[in-house]
Length: 79
Image (spheres, rainbow, N blue to C red):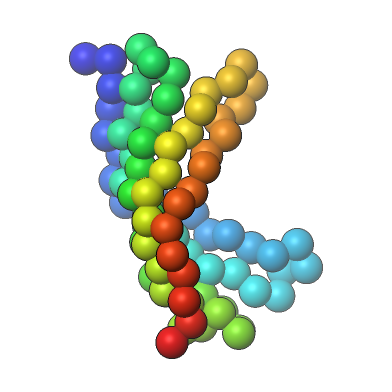
């Protein structure tokens, strides 16, 4: 098989000054033959002003020689 599915990836996105962060659940499908990935994402929590942040969507990643560029699409709101 030329692809692998990753689930339960939970990266934290942290603002530069470290004051605010939010967590995202990713389900990723890597396609090594095409050099891309596709994924769905859900925001499930944050800190400070973003404690009630929610959102979801999908995305695609493009593989380059030294990095992967992930492009996110979807919606985000604060309750």
